[in-house]
Length: 266
Image (cartoon, rainbow, N blue to C red; front, side, top):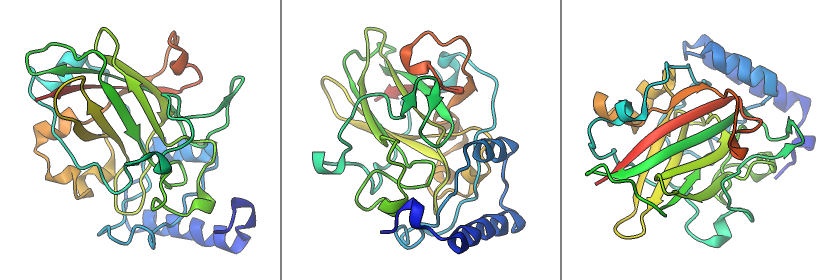
């Protein structure tokens, strides 16, 4: 696979033209996405050949901020969270996982974020239907990088993968049932709206898997998984996002936004 340095100017021009073409065809691009991608100088590649199984191309888009609501309002009264597929890029064994699998998925040098994309502090809480929090549950997340490539053998052009993005991480819920990650705002890739995969393995009982989405994202309505959900189920899987202010947790440092979710296991 060619490296980023070997990609010709003509190739980059074709990519720019493709993105412009998507916009002209009416695929909505939020103002937030334009600002975030311009600031990070992200050049989104076309991985259509790798992801040919997908049925349509999602537009380049990002998060529209929604008012921050208490976690108890985001999910409803202990109604189980919708489950969704693990997807083809879940690292099922150690050979498909990155060398590091901690909760910090991005690379920061001092105060400078090296990883491409918009840094996100992701936090959530896991409970059961009775409202009891689940302590010690293993929480895994994985997502594509800002170049739309997964850290997975089948997840896109390896030569275009952001080597400074871990792509997968694990945390365990604390005494309050809470987990935390430092990652990036998810981006669209061919066939899917922006999303973050989540898998929860409680200390006892069955594993749970779902996907978290961005509020106000134009691609959600066209996404073949998100669009199948009821309106209530969709709300349950939308992250509550706000700017990161006065970060106190180490993983919140150097992030621009904080995303919160509440997961209820059946």
